[in-house]
Image (cartoon, rainbow, N blue to C red; front, top):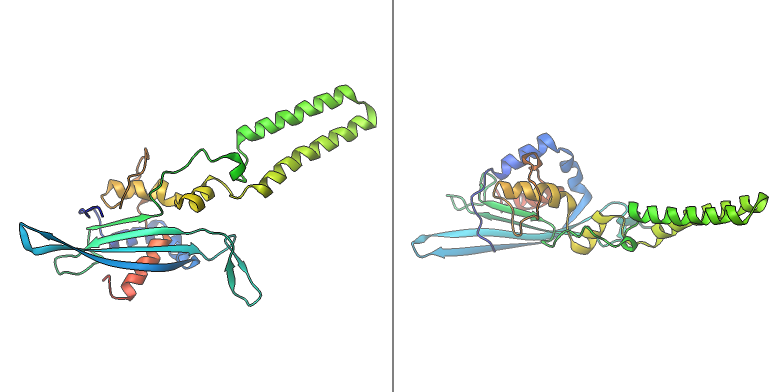
Length: 248
């Protein structure tokens, strides 16, 4: 585990800023289920400070959505997961001068989602969203077919053939959306690579800027200080740790 360095702000300050700027994250907190929280306490001894070990708490967990389109209502009134969709998260924090894991500490790091690279060039057959390039090609195919029909047929036959070509063009789009397994690039990266897009593009660069990002740095992303907020998954984890007296 990378050493936790002193960051810029406390967890309490981050919570306060979330309440001010992204209050809906608190509302969304109940929409996901927090599972399998693993709490590990690590002690690092320092030769030059034998009586001052660094004690770090590292929490690993994952959460999954409890709402449509990722689950189904079943007959008994409950819900059943129908789509794999979950995020790992890691939170690490050092003890303060009193030997406690405090919300007022600045020595903490966090990450939501995996450390894999974001895949931007997702194959068209994997996502329901039709790329402009693909749609342009399909439209050219359709227009070419229409031109051939106009040259070959006349009257009612031509009219009928053009209607059939239009239906064929629309069906091509409909069939693609039915067959592609993922909604869009974000859904693909979420379910295949375990990346949370909101955290990857907005939160992580800002956390890195202020010394609070755990693990791999985001690639070529410009940080925005305004994107300092607690994701709903982090709020659920903090709530879990506070209720068990681990975090004060």
